[in-house]
Each structure stands twice: as C-alpha cells, then as structure tokens.
Amino acid sequence: MCACRLEVVRLRSPSGMAKAAGVALCLAGVLTIALYTGPSMSPVNHHRAFAAHHPHPQAHADGGGKGTWMKGTFLMLLSNTTWSLWIVLQASLLKEYPNKLLSTLVQCGLSTAQSFLLAVAVERDPAAWKLQLDVGLLAVAYSVSSSNN
Image 1: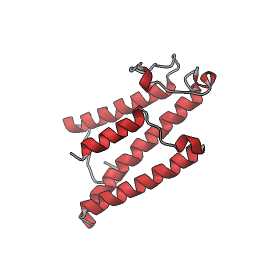
Image 2 (image 1 turned 180 degrees about the vertical axis):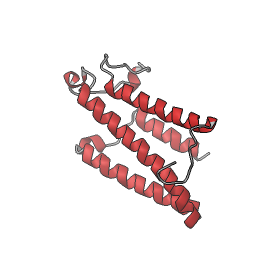
Image 3 (image 1 turned 60 degrees about the vertical axis):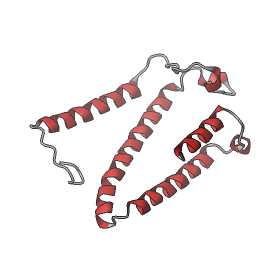
C-alpha cells in the first residue's frame, strides 16, 4: 500500500508487478548514475552557440568530482520524490477545494518565488543577472511567443 493510502498495490497482479518493477528500475538507474566512476560524458550537441562558458577550465576538467555527482543525484531524487508527493497531495486538495485554476496559480506563484530565492542564493554576482542578447534569451522569447499562439 502507498504511504498515503490512496492506492493499493497488489504484487500478485500484473499491474502491481509492473509498478514494483518500474520503481526498482528507476532506483537502479539512480544508483547507477550516483555510483558511476567512469569518464565524464560529453553533451550530444557540440554546436558553439550552446557551449558552456566556464571561466576556470581546470575547475571543470574532472567532471565535477564524486561528491558533486552524489550531491546532484541525491538532490534530483529528492526533487522527484517531493514532486510525486505534491501530485498525490493535489488529488486530496482538489477533492476539498475543487478550484483547479486557483491551485495552479498558487503552485506557479510559490514555484516562482522559490526559484527566485534559490537563484539569488546561488548566483550573487549582479553582472550575471544582466540580460544579454544571446541564444538563451532568444529561446525564452520564442517559447513565450509560441505559447501565446
């Protein structure tokens, strides 16, 4: 049974076995990524417009180190777990308060505030916050214009 008791998982049924196998496969993937000690993987897209610009090449030559991989994997697992719990909580929330638009508005507002606070905490250099006409800005402008159509 689920911790929130919203779903019953019967391991003897085909759907229950598929759910358990999916969870096991996902956890095996997470552990593989976390414990992988081979060479760092290069990005698929090698175009110069999408190249990362690092001011100190020696700091990024080793792929970030084992501690960075472990921390990143843990944070990704935590993010996915909390998002899953939020989706489960939303089902209960929408039974009590059926206004989906207000729920979405509150979720987007809180996500924006959380992202802003995290961005300010991580990037404290004011020069990095200046907008520049580059591929990243054009991609955002294109996605905004195409979503309005």
